Length: 370
Ligand SMILES: Cc1cc2nc3c(=O)[nH]c(=O)nc-3n(C[C@H](O)[C@H](O)[C@H](O)COP(=O)(O)O)c2cc1C
Ligand SMILES: CCCCCCC(=O)C(=O)O
Image (cartoon, rainbow, N blue to C red; front, top):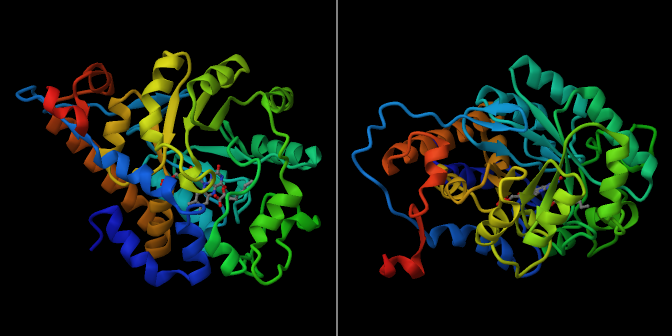
């Protein structure tokens, strides 16, 4: 029986090929960013209120004009058909049934139009994550496909000028299985496939080196804004000054993220940098966070610290690999239940109350000062 996200993690080990498992689990280099993201949540303690009549609570919140019932969504992750034959279709069905918004990766193994169709069948919502190719025609094509498919926002990932070194992918000669490709790229385009690689190389690393534009800058955001009227959320912000630049360049939101510890190693945890970014942004735009969130209680801590909402990466892939759409739905339901129970147990009836209580979350080093 799967009662926690960790239950799915343990079982997913048996469901995935070694290549897929290593790709999904990996952080870069020593994986210290990956470990710190999770560990930092354990160092934050919750100090509940009592006797607050929590018979009626409301966890609903607004994400750029989309009402979500709990502030927990699905982070973009590439190549989901490596986890389950229905890949992103199963994820979107499960997320939509759970009432959670899903961000679809540019590098999905299912085309964006198919995913938005499936989401709308179940009343769900999709944002589209964008990687910027050196060839701007390809980038334009991705934006056009996403707009045509009816996504509600673009999420521009900015922490990947080059790919972080994932050692297992190099050792495994990572490559997509023959029957899978970059489904948002036309079949006739050679960039739909990952090329064969030499011993000790990762096909993903080679693909990124040749295709992805390392000159990405704030000017690129301006250029993207000339190509679309969709709101743009900048994903991969770790510094207050960059959050302010995002606002200056017209971003509609940011995601505080270190890419799940897969890019720069030895970074601070995302939950550690969140408070300074929240202060700098000062409610001008929504601030989301991802990285290391493994329970509804972790999500509650992030929201209590001021995040508009959180996104979950690896746990969705674990649940997808074990039970497809119903696993994704169940994993999200588990988190939603933990979040709502947590609200009751700390004595908060709304997200507003959760965020107004400045003494709810305390770092373990400061607990003796209470
Ligand atoms: C297997 C995998 C693939 C990912 N693919 C993408 C991607 O295509 N685009 C992107 O912006 N982020 C991608 N990410 C990063 C996630 O969106 C997210 O930032 C990260 O996984 C959050 O950390 P968590 O896994 O600890 O929840 C990927 C992460 C994983 C684990
Ligand atoms: C430009 C970087 C592409 C990374 C591919 C997917 C991803 O984000 C990840 O594996 O992490």
